[in-house]
Length: 212
Image (tube, rainbow, N blue to C red; front, side, top):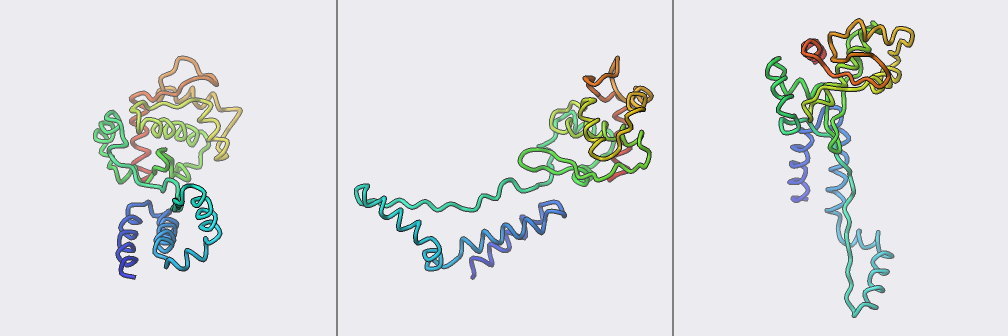
C-alpha cells in the first residue's frame, strides 16, 4: 500500500498538468493502471493462468527456457497543455507583440497525440458572417502555432462553418470579399489559401483576448 500511496501522489501531480476538462478521465486511467501494477501476484496468476501455461509449454519446447512478456495498458496520448517549445519562434513573437500569454493559448487549445486541437466551442458572435471570418482566423492561427505561418484554406474554413452550422452559402464569397483586408489573396475561390495579413493578425489578437 505504501507504494500505491507514493504513486497516488505522482498521479495527482500529473493530473494537475492536464486541462481541466480531462482531469477526471486522466486520473481514472492512471489510477487503474497503478492498481493493476500493484495487484498481488497470486491474483495476477489466477487471472492469466491459461496464458502462462501456454507460455510455459512453448518454453519447454525451446530448450526449457520460458519467456513471459508482461504488457502494460496502452493509454494512448493523454491531452496536455501547450508549452513554448510547441510554438514556432514567429508565433512566440506574435504573442509577445500582442501581450498574449501562454495561459490564454491553453484556454483556447490543447495538445493530444502531437496534434494541437481547439477548445473553442463558440466564437463569441451570433452573426453568421462574423462567425465565418473568426473561424477562418482561428484555423489559420491553429495552423501557425507550430509553423509560424498563419494560413488556412477556403475549403477547410467552409467545412468547419458547416459543422458549426455557421455556413451562409448565398453570401459565403461576399463575406470574405468584404473582409479581404484580413487576408492576402488576389481572387476568392474554393482553392484559395487564406493567409492572414497584418490587419488580419491584429483582428485575430483582439478576438483571442476577447475569448480567453
